[in-house]
Every structure is written in C-alpha cells, then in structure tokens.
View (tube, one colour):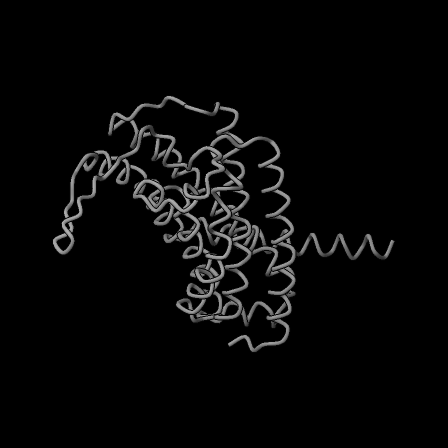
Length: 269
C-alpha cells in the first residue's frame, strides 16, 4: 500500500508539472515559430530543388561538371527505401541531405531554448526550492519536448504535401505502400524521443547557457543521426516502429536518470 501511495504521488506531481509545462509551451511564441519553420522548410526545399533539377555547375579549378539531381517524387523528402549497398548509405547528394532528418536538429533548438529559459529566468531554482522534485522536472520536460517534436514532424509532413503539389512532383509510391509510410513516420517521430532526452540532458548541464546546450545536443545527436535512415526507411514495417518506440522509451528513461543525477549534484545557477 505504501508503494502504491508513493507511485500515486509521483504520477500526480508529474501530471501537475506536465500541465504547467504544456501550457507554457503552447502559450509561448517560440513553439509556433519552430512549427511554422517546420511547415515552410519542405515547401522551400521541394520547390527550389525542383527548379534547380538538371542545372550544371562547373568547378573553376578542376573543370569538373556536376549535375544537380532533384527529387523523383515527393516521398523522397522523407527518406529512401531500404538499401543494402554500403555506397548508397554514404550518399551525400543534395536530396539525401535536404530531408525530414533535418528536423531532429530543429528539435534540439526547441528543447534547449525551452529548458534554458527556466534557468535563465530563475523559474527552475524557485520551482525546486518551493515544491518540485528534480525527477518530476526531467520527466515533464522530456514528455513536453516529445510533444513539441511530434508537432514539428506533423507540420513538416503537411508542408511536404503542399510543396509537392506546388512543385508538381509525383506522389507515386515506388517500392513501398501507404502502410509502410505510416510506420516510417511513426518510427521517425518516436526516434525524436532519443534526441529530446539528449537535449534535456545537455540543457541541465548547460542550464542558462543555451548555446552550450545546443552544442552538446548537436554533438551527441550526431552519434545517433546516421542510424535514423536505417531504422526508419520509407518501406518501414511494424518492426521498425516497435524498435523506435522501445528505443525512444529506453533512451528517454536512461538519459532521464542521468539528467536527474546532474541536477542533484550541480548548482541550479
């Protein structure tokens, strides 16, 4: 009975803090700016790269000609199908770099600034002094950050559909189905939980220094970034989605525990 009571108290505290953080996220302008950017980016990418498709650039030093290749269809901005060719995995073409995977770095900006504002304004110090536990704070920030990340990915999806229509790219699904694409998006969204947990950890280390938090987030995030196309290809299945959900949850719990220890052992200013 005592364990149940403690668990009930923990969930109630997290619920209260989560509601406060969620309200702060949705009433802040920066969240909507990031969502707006997430919506506009795929439109600009699809339109501009389609306009440049077939353009030839010449290196003045070597005389080597490079032909810019555009997207074959709208879905390429979300990734590619499973490819066992090692050379394809190292593809550094314009279309392979300008895609939805850039959103993970945008998530880092959102989370780092959202958390650093607590320390810069003195809100976090006052919060911990008055009533809040550091564990509750980490859990709440991770959950709210994940919701913010999911909103940005959904905005990117909507923007890509509009951008595809404007640039008149085909919507034909080659090598995958609509179900595969749903699993692909689920995988990418839940993989963002790893980046959110990394950003929360970096933010409690950097505290009011948002620039330091971002540098740490981007540095650590790069270690996971190369795995995203392999875990969430366009032809994803339920296994890919399950691995992403489990991986995002485990990393969230593990990194959250480290974040809690950092807050316990360091100054709040």
